[in-house]
Each structure stands twice: as C-alpha cells, then as structure tokens.
Image (tube, rainbow, N blue to C red):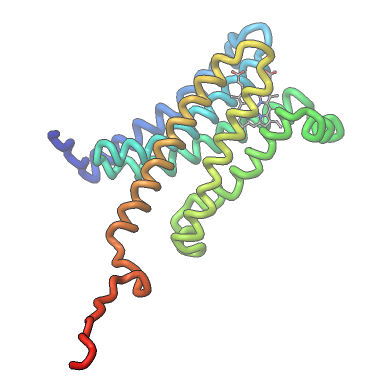
Amino acid sequence: MTRLPTPSGRQLAAIKLLVFVLCLLPALQLALGWRADALGANPIETITRASGEWTLRLLLIGLCVTPLRRITGLHWLVRLRRMLGLFAFAYAAAHFMTYLWLDQFFDWRAIATDILERPFITVGFAAFVLLLPLAATSNAFAIRRLGGRRWQALHRSVYAIAIMGVVHFWWLVKADVLAPLVYALILAALLGARAWWREQERRRQLAARPPARHLQKKTIRIVPLGK
Ligand code: HEM
C-alpha cells in the first residue's frame, strides 16, 4: 500500500484551519437562521436538536481518530483530536444553555425537577458534567500537571460520555429510533475495534514475555544409582 505523505507544518496548519471552519459551520448556520427568522416554527427546538446532534457527531468523529490512525498510518490525525473534543464541548455547552435559557428561562426549580425526574435529561446532564473536566484539561499545561497516565485515564471517560449521549438521544425519541440506532451502531463499532486491538496487544505482549521462572522447564539429570 502506498503511504500517504505526512503534511508539513504549514499544510497541517491549513488542515487545522479547515477543520476549525467546518466545525464552526453548523453554529454559523444556526446563528444566521436565527437572525433571518428561518429556523422553522419552533426555533428553540431546532437549536436544541442541532446542537445536541453536533455534540454527538463531534464526539464520535473524535473517537474515529485512533482507529483511522491505526488503519491508515496517518499519525498526524491525532493533532486534530483536541480541537474536535473542544468543539464537541462547545456544542454541548450551547445545547445546555439553550435548554437553561431559551427553554426553561432559568427556572431552577423546574430544571432541578427535570434533571431528577426525566431520565433522558438526567443522563444528558451527567454526560455534560463529565465533559467539563475533559474540556478543562485539554491543554498542554494540564497534561504536564496530571502526567500522561493520569491524563489518559481521565480522558477515557469520553467513551462513557459518548454512550450516555446515545442513551440520552434514544430515551428522548418517542417512536422513530432510527437516528439514535445509527449513532449506537457507529459507537459500538468504534468501541468494539478498540477492545479488539487491546486484546490483540495483550496477546502479543503475553507471547513475547519469557515464561515465569516457576513455569520454566526444569532439566532433571538422572544419575543411575551406584555410580
Ligand atoms: C454530552 C451531552 C449531550 C449530548 C451528546 C446530547 C445530545 C442530544 C441529542 C443528539 C439530541 C436529539 C437531537 C434530535 O432530536 O435530533 C438532544 C436533544 C435534547 N437534549 Fe441533549 N445532549 C446532551 C446534554 C444535554 C443536557 C445537559 C440537557 C439538559 C439538561 C439536554 C437536553 C436536551 C433536550 C431538552 C433535547 C430536546 C428534546 C426534544 O426534542 O424533545 N441535553 N440532545
């Protein structure tokens, strides 16, 4: 297979700019639609739904980076992951703010009741709370402070967050589960691929390790009696 070239510093900066603009487009579309009064009969619902779906999409696109890197050998893709994660957080924050402000008018009692009594809101809220430390530690300073291992362990919660996002979507749709089902299948494939690779790695390491001392074959010399 012909290997794709690694982009130069300038090319990578251009790719990052392109991804940045692409991630911004849905927000721009919503903002322009809001100004032009073109978000349909229920603009608040349109914003809530679009921001919720983009949160989920960006979480899943971020989870695609590692498998894509492994399959294609394009290791520089990892340099896009932080931006994708931060955009996922930005859309989640916009989604949550739309709910707090435009949907509930900061009626804290009604919001607390919703969080406690409507399971899809409970799980969405939990996912958002779990996203906060990930967004707060998505910088070089936090990686240095926490150390690579602890940082990685913390950022593994993105799998749980993505699962909660899909469950949140599944529980809120009344009848047509097709869209959440598609997200659930994509997420299952991404998590399944990771589990499979981890198992392969474990087996390779086991095969490469020398057998433990007490399991090593002992050579027994048989000395005939009387000699
Ligand atoms: C990581 C966190 C979250 C993700 C990934 C997420 C994702 C989604 C998705 C995909 C939808 C459905 C969009 C559609 O119908 O096309 C949605 C709708 C919604 N979400 Fe979230 N959400 C999150 C957090 C929250 C939070 C914190 C709240 C409020 C406390 C919330 C409240 C809602 C509401 C009210 C709807 C609209 C329900 C309806 O249309 O009846 N979500 N969300």
